[in-house]
Length: 299
Image 1: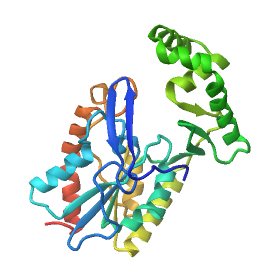
Image 2: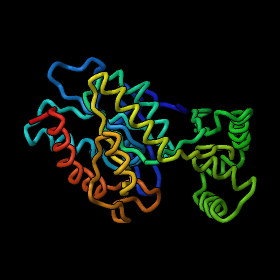
Image 3: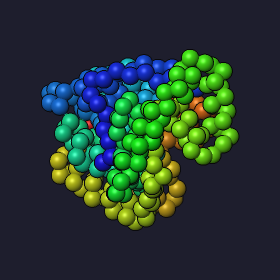
């Protein structure tokens, strides 16, 4: 599936718009620890999506999943427990489908809310930690991992560059400007050191047809139903044709009535800000509550 997160680890992100220390729980997700064994009487809802739902890149602790949890509790649904099983990555729709089948099911959810782009996209990206850098390479290309490692080794060997970058804000500002306005080997090396990330150019995005995507979701719905798990799909974008296919295949879905706009996202990276998480939780709650009532999970 490309990568997963290390459980029980602490980290720190510092970027424009975000300065955040965070902890990943005992399963490598954002949120409180939870047991694989579901307590008696608990209605467990697993939410699976991309980085908008994962919320590592949100400069606050209480993301929209946590806000939803509070809304259920404040309305008397003390037995409802939302677990955030999301993992970041823009083109990871099919990967997240596999994530549900191979990882999320072991947590024994009663309901899975799948926040996904339809038609599906996927890429061949693998991520790995190497010498404190994130290397990104193509899993199906021979030599791709080695190329990413060599990029790190090259900048790692540039001791003079790293020394001046670390002690001089003037030099760092020059490097930032150069990296943003020039192409080439030196600019790439600056970018690797600035971002602690080395990528290879052979990472490709694959798109699925609408029919194939709906077939995958339909098969997933049937498979989950055989295990007494209900699937609710929340498309990132919903139009009449997608809604028609979901309805014809008996796939339950919700469609919150809002559009992401500039006021809801961080300027520098496109992830949801506090207004965005507030808007999502307030709009999503009544729809999810109604859907759970229709499925006879709550009164």
